[in-house]
Length: 578
Picture (cartoon, rainbow, N blue to C red):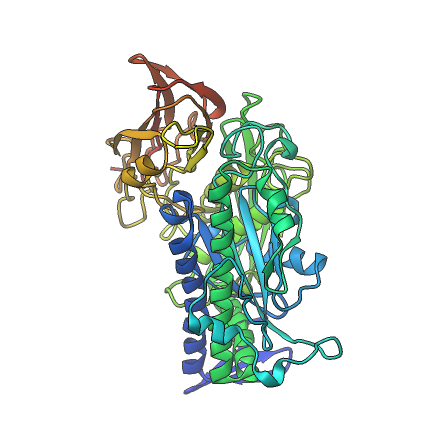
């Protein structure tokens, strides 16, 4: 649809869609954008405050979103891009597989059904105008306001077998559980197929009619480590969805079903219009680039990713043909990850912070990711690192291509890895000597230099929007000690604008444990642009008895009490000649 299909008439907005004039009030549209976004944000706050694991509570490794009755995303919280761009595919799978009734919740983590990797578990819940009351023995305690919002009025408490219960919205969240089973603690090890990575959950009902399905929960908990922590995080996700449902019903009660539904549609159409305008500002043409992951952890060869971005008018075609075939190691990305990375990069081209984060953003963009490649792996490929490592490289190659068209807007490469570190074993501090622990963390690095500013140091960039676990929280929760945590000075690439520096993080284990590392950018540093230098690659080592042994970027190792793991993360690339 061309930009000429839209006109603005004073205080009245008009969208021309397929010849049908749809009127909306711009002020009301902005109110609804803020309302729906606030619901997603409040869901995230509820999840963070009630979660048990430091990975969710401290690192904020979660995301929340609101969807319309057709399963189209309306609003997202300011959470993790790698989750948010792929969550719509998970919701679509849930709705395809299960006929949801009010009070039901679906859980899934299957990467081949819209998931990302197994530790990321998505919960989906319908929001009905006749939402069921919260059960009195529900494991989640809700405040009185939320219970009132979820409880049907007396006139609605009628048998529902003979009348439909209209679904107005769906709410969903995705949280990274610090362990989901598999061969190694943290479920981020070197499996060569998905069966070795952990418990794969297809779309299943976790909650029925407002009641937690204890049989399903027992089955899940029997296959994961740190049972109490896992149960607590699942319950936090359930409570988060109920919070979102309550707030949406409050909006419907105030504004009515018709208006809330209409403005959800307007938000999707409006975001599509903004994305078309952004794409229209890019010069027509084909823009190509390639980059590579260091290796897959099994074979020492680079794993290449190629892209061709074709811009024609207000549409974009993103073609990954020519990328490497899927590999044995755990760096394969499923289609949802690749689409998520494309969504993130093009969303970065939009100006302003008030763009509706809705399904409309992807409507002018076509993504071609050939099946059986590292950007669209097929079952039973191992995928733990596709979510965290390959997603970053896809972003790098997309920005590298767009830099040819928009040199004044595109930054140099950021660290290009999440430096995934997992450590697990038995916590000797527990009264129950058999208590397991699973620690997971991604480690910050350098941001690439920007066209007018230096890159930032020691930050999480691109597909991750998390934090490092505070030393106090880490040492309280696990038998670990942070020995060093500082900026890695001089690791950013030189240039007119310097790349940000990475970090050095050294952690000592106080008990025997098994450690896994899943990282990248150890062989080639993040690229500079316009004559700027590349950032320095990262490195890792295990220190035992005062002697450091350098280790590869991907693998698992046995640690003794007193061993230290030292992670030095890459710096960002520089931009422009000095």
